[in-house]
Length: 151
Image (cartoon, rainbow, N blue to C red; front, side, top):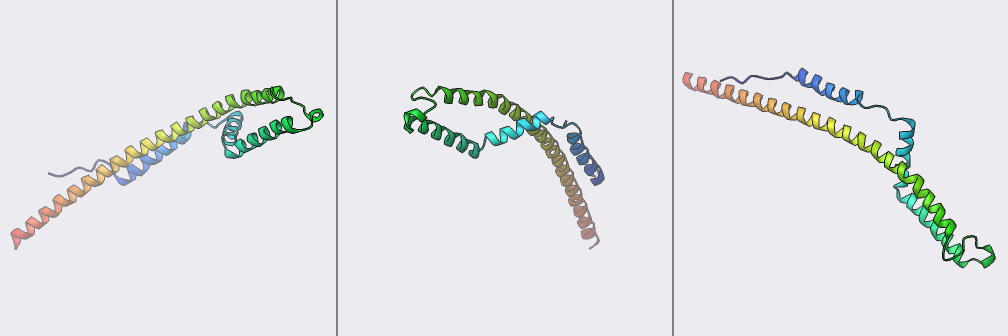
């Protein structure tokens, strides 16, 4: 009973390179607008941006509640101008964030697909190594049996 080796080491390496190259070939370059959307997504989703908005809101509301009446420009309690600007920021940023997340998701899906293919290749390599080890074990046992017969 001899085990047959399914693939050589060189074939494994070639197949792994084919998987990686296939992933790179099928990954279209992101457009300039995609890059802008990802940049905005990365920066708006940061603690720094949150702190900027928080400080801006606190200063705006604090000024318009505590400053002398003749220096207030957005009267309490309505803060109409602040609400308008905040809503405009949201209206402009939300679609850009969603676009950036879609671009990031496409890249993550591609990476996951390549990882899966490489893991499947690694599993095949492991099975081949186990097959080699079983074959070597069988051969060692046969050699030992032959040596015992001669002794």
